[in-house]
Amino acid sequence: MLRFAVFATLAVAAGCAPRDTADLVLKNATVYTGEDGRPRAEAVAVKGDRIVFVGSSADAARFEGAATRVEDLAGAVVFPGFADAHYHLSGVGEREMTLNLEGTSTKEAFLAKVKERVDQTPAGAWVVGRGWIETFWTPPVFPTRQDLDAIAPDHPVMLTRADGHASIVNTRALEIAGVTKATPAPDGGALNKTPAGELTGMLIDRAQGLVGRHLPAETPEQLDSMIVIGARRSAELGWTQVHDAGGSWAEIGRMRRLYQAGQVKLRIYKAVGGPSPDADSLLAMGRSIGEFGGRLTIRAIKTWIDGALGSRGAFLLAPYADEPGSRGLITVDTTRFRAMLVKALERGIQVETHAIGDGGNRLVLDMYQWAFEAVPRGEKRADPKDPRWRIEHAQIVDPGDIPRFKSLGVVPSMQPSHAIGDLYFAPSRLGGGRLVGAYAWKAFLDLGLPLAGGSDAPVERGEPMIEFYAAVARRDIRGNAGPDSLWHPEQKLSREQALKLFTGYPAYAAFEDDRRGTIAVGKWADFTILDRDIMTVPEADILGAKTLLTVIGGEIVHRAQR
Image (tube, rainbow, N blue to C red; front, side):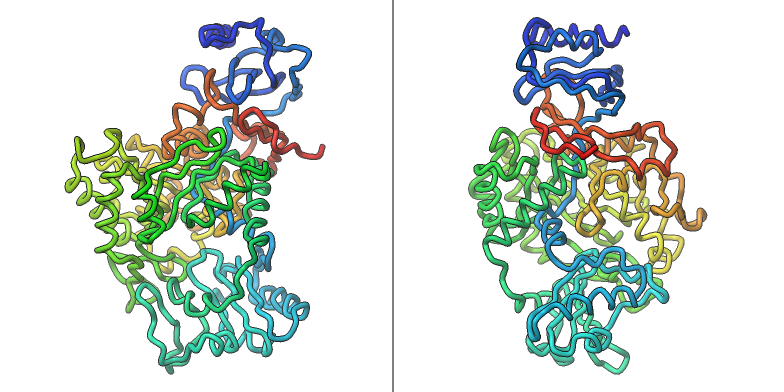
């Protein structure tokens, strides 16, 4: 009870005396504040978009007035608003609007689902989908264009792997694109072929653009719907903010219009893709922070150094164990990348770089270090603070490179669900020896690094409970952990550590740790409210937790049907 009295005192000190009424009171709950030294409470009061009281339910009653909305949570559990530090918002909306191939656990099921859509589509029209992943199939091999030709001889088909770094297309799609076995692969891409030199239909990384540019353009209405549906889906899952990794000024323009119309409530920390003209524009104009009451910030450039592990596009220090002739791909023009890094430091723009392989991670660390030395702290940098540059994914890191994140001040932005999905193929891709630095969450945290947790949706399902479970269990959703000798269970996190992955650490990575990430007087009133206590229930029960309420800036934006 003493800690609740302390919270009440803090409310008064912050200028909101108990006689002042709140707009919203949440009471009779278990509240995890995320604040060191004051981790638990029973109630929260909100005025406008800010927290004005955290403490006991009895004391919270003094903030109730005739106009106060009082939510008796009857034992539900309140957390600081969950944030996904690596997300593709429009991609999530598009997944909900098109052929979603998630959960096709056999090749036969995959083809049956595609055929069902083919049969519903006029002849000659494109069939497009996303979400398949062959690692769950027996045998775990990529599909081929011949597989698709058998069920779609009259439709061009393009189906993107879950990771977004590879697509399978049929012969009709290749014909429309004019791609033959003689077509050279673009830099940063590959056209998979049989031993006889025939195209398999698998397009890796930038090679996807050879066919993708021939897809029908989405209408403005469809592009808007992707954002609206993605934002609504995110709030339903309990996300209060997403770090939207990559995009364009055209997309930002749509977001601004949708915010203005009240169609989007989710907080978005937005990056533009680079190096590119869009990135050049951000560097020229400078960052925009806290538009629409703190709901939209544009201050980062997202870039890509390599591909994905599953499609063997991740850049490795040594060849793939299951494809000795390949070390993967470098997908960026390193000269343009270096020039962009210098300008970003000079303009105070954050850089977040996709790197999955140990070679890719080392290359990014090397180039970040070069930029920090080229533009030292002082007059040349626009922001005297730590630039908080990030490496997105940091999936496979040579153990000797992990301390470099700390010495350079680089934020690892990692997705726990990648580990529980990749456990089926990472050992064969890498061999056991290189798994020591794979998905090494605890190794980063043990150095005192802020580890920003995310999902990479729609690469993964984008559900916070799956991510939290993966971080603490290091098992897939069926309970499989892989061989302990290879999968390093010592990298599991405590529940307190896992909670920070989706609250305090993403706030730090977005330069918002003074405004969000914990439940404290003066911070934004962002809460994720669950029907069970994921900090204490058995591991398997975490996956069954439901989001009852999602509150953003004091506004209830999602209420579950009960």
